[in-house]
Amino acid sequence: MNGVFSRDKVLTIDTMNPTVKNVEYAVRGPIVQRAIQIEKELREGVKKPFTEVIKANIGDAHAMGQQPITFFRQVLALCSYPELLNENMFPEDAKNRARRILQACGGGSVGAYSASQGIDCVRQDVARYIERRDGGVPCDPDNVYLTTGASDGIVTMLKLLVCGEGASRTGVMISIPQYPLYSAALAELGAVQVNYYLNEEKCWSMDLSELERSLAEARKHCNPKALCIINPGNPTGQVQSRQCIEDVIRFAAKERLFLMADEVYQDNVYAEGCQFHSFKKVLFELGPEYSDNVELASFHSTSKCYMGECGFRGGYMEVINMDPEVQAQLSKLVSVRLCPPVPGQALMDLVVNSPQPGEPSHTTFMKERTATLSLLAEKAKLTEQILNTVPGITCNPVQGAMYSFPNISLPEKSIKEAKALGQAPDMFYCMKLLEETGICLVPGSGFGQKDGTYHFRMTILPPTDKLKILLAKVKEFHQKFTQQYS
Image 1 (cartoon, rainbow, N blue to C red):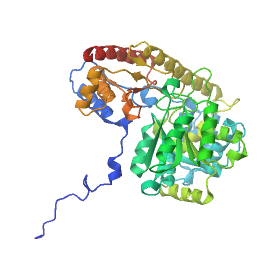
Image 2: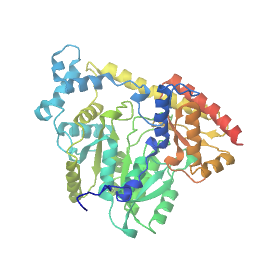
Image 3: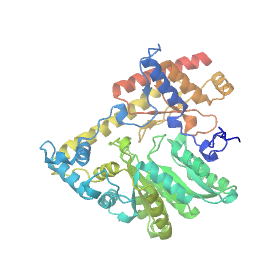
Image 4: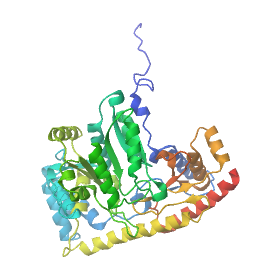
């Protein structure tokens, strides 16, 4: 009135999208925010009982010191600055890969948009990779979608799946413990999160009876339509057996569930007797009764395995047995975001089309790949062994992926104090650990866990010397914490 505009905000906490307020992402949650503050305090000269923060909260390989694969970076450098193709410092196979990728890019530049589904020749290479991986099971490049990391593909599929209101609202079955992307995406989409619990006593295996219990309970209040599996597991580090995967596929077929297989750690298998089996391969080996009917989306990424190239945001999704009309809607949906990052697509191409025997870069590539995975296997074993020497901490074998998820026994006094502060007991524990030692871990409550149990997730990525220091500090802290609150 009188020419004076109201100063009230249009967008407030009360008028914003309510589903966003339900989103939580523990991997970058309050613990990490406090860790960033502590780093700033250390730079400003504030005295602490430690000199640095060790962030063992996230699977960011290169940030932890893992070295990039030479061939990948050579080709990406050539793609980013094609003038280098005229220099003699790069091997011919790297130049040939770069030329092929650039020829498929608009204007011969990775700065140009690509097709929304991804560069055609890259999707063809992904399809051939999947066929080799799965022993010749056919893969149609038209069913391959390049994505901005695996997360982009997962969220896109969930968008397609979610519909309905009230008792007809879509439910999505996710493992507990789970990677918080799933719970966050379901919260944002207003879908119903349907928990099924992994069996900690059996090395975090999937239990068919638990799937049946979870589904029956969920059908009382929602419409469960999808089942998500992470294999190898995050945060739990298990590798599911082939029998387990068969059981899950049969269960999905019987109950008419859409399968989502998160397989971003497929090269990260360490334990003796364990082997990665793709859901697609097992699906087709079960025969036409299943391979012609079960709907499946599987996901892979450049961020994990031996690559660790998180920042390039490369990935792919393959869809199997999707209704053609729905697939047309999927293609429309991905077109809205124009295209995944083209350098990430180029990197994905190198992962699925790596140097072959006889090519100049093959020996170095294999040496670096083997060394990276061997070191991760050593650190997985080291982590399990040291944590299991600590009274009150029990750690299952880290069979794969990049994390340990040990069970921690907390004194009742600390549990009561945590609850009085409005904190989950393992959040209280991890915050104390950070403040006293500078070690940043993620509490198990951020991933979900059975009531009355407590955990933390710790990556195995730090260099071996730093990992040993980290584990020694955790051991010392846990003993001190237990004494303090006993």
